[in-house]
Image (cartoon, rainbow, N blue to C red; front, side, top):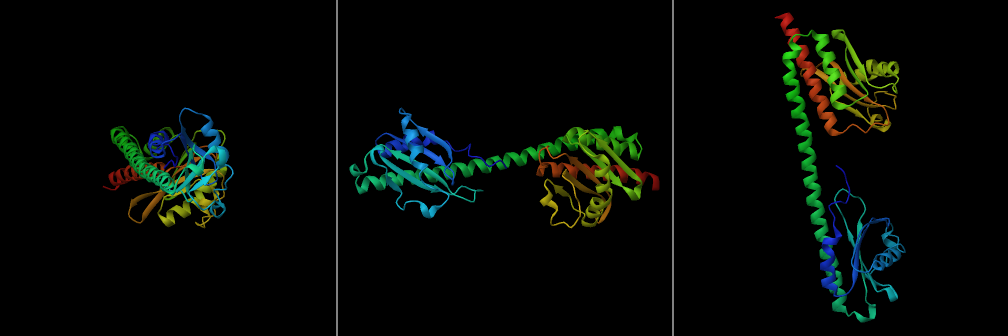
Amino acid sequence: MNLNLNPVNLNKYLPFFQHGIECPCALGLFSHDSNLIQLAHKDDPDEFEILVKHIKRYDFDNTNALPGPNIIDIGADGIFAKMPIMLPHFEQPHWLTGLIKRPACEMNGTQRAKATDTLLNIANCILDDYTLQTTLTGMTDELTVRYEELNLLYGLDDADSHHISMDEKQAISCLVNNCIEYMNVDLGVFYAPNLELSLHKLNTIQLDLNSMLRIIHNSLYRYIVSTEKTLVINQNKDIDWTGAKINTVNKILAAPVMLTKHHPVGILVLVNTPHKPDFSNSDRKLCDVLASEAAKLIQARRDSITG
């Protein structure tokens, strides 16, 4: 999931802050390390500049260094208010801040409490909106994955009649080519030594094919067949725990080809060079679908031979 703060719209909340304060003001949202993420102000652009100037004085990354009160007197510029927000998926708090254009001496305790309560209510609304939007985004991402899987499955089903006229090697070769085209990868490999099948399709000149094939045919094949699990390698640290002894800078997505449960006959491997985007959870699921299709192609032809 893309973790950004697009669902947050401070302009929506600025009128509520202005109504609660009843004087010129501005709102800002800052990260834990005092970087400005979003701002909302009206009429006077200087309000924004003043707000940022004062916030830069505080080390939000060190909460112990922050002044205790939620409302801080900043002299002639007015009053600076702050409120932490713990958004989902973030380890550090964000900070909702406000600039109230009124000297601190003019605000009594009731008015200060009202300002604090208004900022707190806005912070809670932002949290609710952000949580809802990220939940909906997650659902959309999942539906996109399912849609891609259905498209691929229907495409494979439509191709079955075309594959019937092919022998085993031709059908698997066609499948590897589909991997290259549909998933836009640099190298697709099908390796099943016990079936005497070793096929690959290279889609770039920036990859050392012989070195990569040695890894696939040896350590990667042994690991996938022994674990019977799909493996994703986007960085070197992704294999630190595997003990697979795979040494490559390339990104790898490898799935076992299972004829039946606990009966792997080969592996389907997709490889990208380092500059390509990381393999996603969607890519992993699609690779599993393609590996299952490879098993079906092999099973159909082996069954027809054995009767």
